[in-house]
Amino acid sequence: MAFRSFPLRLIAASNAFKGSLSALQASRAMALGARDLFREASVEIVPISDGGDGFLDVMRALRGGRVTKVAVSGPLGGLIRAPLLLKERAAYIEMALASGLALLKKSRKSPDAMNASSRGTGSLIRAALDRGAREIVVGLGGSATNDGGAGMAQALGFKLLDAKGRELAPGAAPLLDLARILPPEPRLLGRIKEARFVGVSDVENPLLGARGSARTFGPQKGATPAQVRLIEKGLSRLARVADRDLGRKVAGMPGAGAAGGLGFGLMAFLGARMRPGSDWILKDSGLPRRLRKADAVLTGEGRLDKTSFDGKAPLILARAARERGIPVAIVCGSLDEAVRARLADSGVGSVATLTEVAGNEDELFRRAPLLCRQAAALALKRLFLA
Image 1 (cartoon, one colour):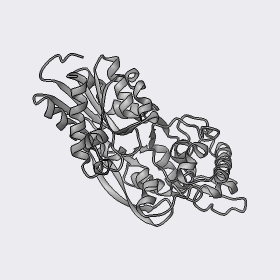
Image 2 (cartoon, one colour):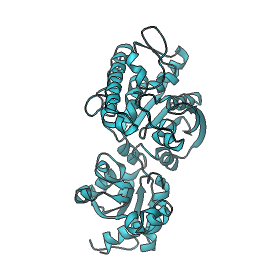
Image 3 (cartoon, helix red, strand yellow):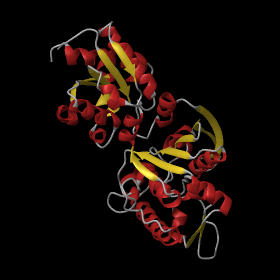
Image 4 (cartoon, one colour):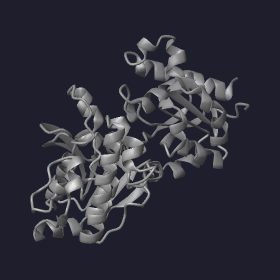
């Protein structure tokens, strides 16, 4: 494509590079790379997310607000301090920061899909209600749990009981004994009913079946084939009892299987609405409006592979830009060559990776900001000047 005009009007809108750059850091690095190549370029920095890693950072960058730390139970017990973003009467929660797999790695605990609990996420929701929030948005992804949101519900005062009236222990395994669900005490239930809940995720899987939470994501959390079958049975029991006692038949809804079934839990216990993460955040960021004035878009994420085409924010943004005839360059940490041919169909005009700029994968994490900046300049060079 021939270069058209100076100065360029660019949008730098990146997802997080997991483990090395937040969405805001990556977007800023890309903006610097754009100005290295085109000094007079005007660059809007708009960090993005699909509801998973980096969701809270993105919402704070877009909406502002105040972050407070709340003491909650970690996915396998023990107290951790998890962040809660408050903005007027709204609250934003990244479930992975309370109930996520990365927390286990950080504490050197092995994944345990049978016993990990989403209780910490429920404690964050309760803290938001205690602080007067009336809209609570939960970003789903990166969970260590497969309990269908049972732990979350227990933290909010729901009683999950076995046939003898005993409260269930944390995790997916005890769901096999679930006999009855009782609501919270009236005052807390009233506050829950007064609030609006939204679950944000790029996952559209239902709770059960071949594409369900246990079979699709359980192995990622350490579940053996035998444990996957047990988790599936437990989640199926949870769905049946919730349908009977709560009156919400939502196991087959898109997103019910997200975050170990927390999507189901949000819908069944709290009446939440699930939203495709990328679409929700792109709209919230005003990117459709911003695209009308842009000459090109820089976007990216840590790894570009086949999963990037399943609702991930950079490819959703690229398609939106293509519809408006706006060229797109992508920066990523690494690229699965098997998907390169699909990129053009999604509106991507050029790609540059941190790996090719570094020349040595050992340098990727240590020099990520500089490498992202250099890769952005290279991607734009390929887009406009090749």
